[in-house]
Length: 239
Image 1: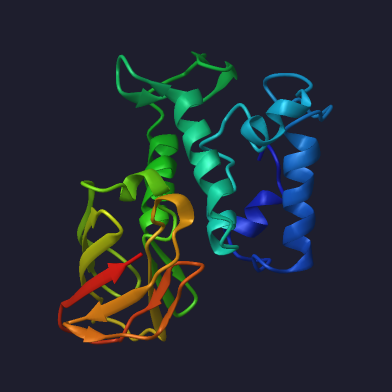
Image 2: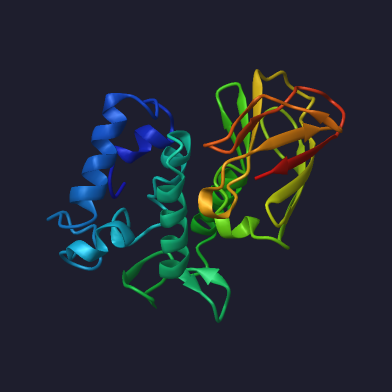
């Protein structure tokens, strides 16, 4: 549908890091959605300065959108770009619904009240916050950095996952983030990561879990490898 190869990435038929995934995404970004004779691109040939901002978008952006593929590849800026472009292109603010199609930026064309497309957007937003990759659970990996500006909060309560409900309450302050995390306990999983994409890409300096120093983190990627405990853990992170 629209661009058949993309469904192979969404369904994980081809792994996110396989060569085939690279080829599909390169064709999607550089050909199909920018200058293709297939007619998928809604804005005609794209000038160089709009290559990143407009690439990867088709007229039914909730039906075909590689947000999940980019998240699986840890290509977070590309995932966020596609989700935001989707929202701007397809959202009817007056009625607070998503259109099925658009054929010009910020001009919707309908039909609207497309429940299946709205569900796709909600699912992709959920994937930015909570995502299963095999037997690993990723928390907050896809959040825009602006969501972690000082004074802001992110709260998830009993968010459903394959492994069971997960809860995260995150609060940001100047060069610091605190989070309460309760991991799932229904099904066994191998690992869990909390990713705190602090503004400016500041590297993590120190991590404490339940008041004790914790060393299993990557300063540059801002990833924290969490202990697999059933009780709620209190996490303090300095940047």
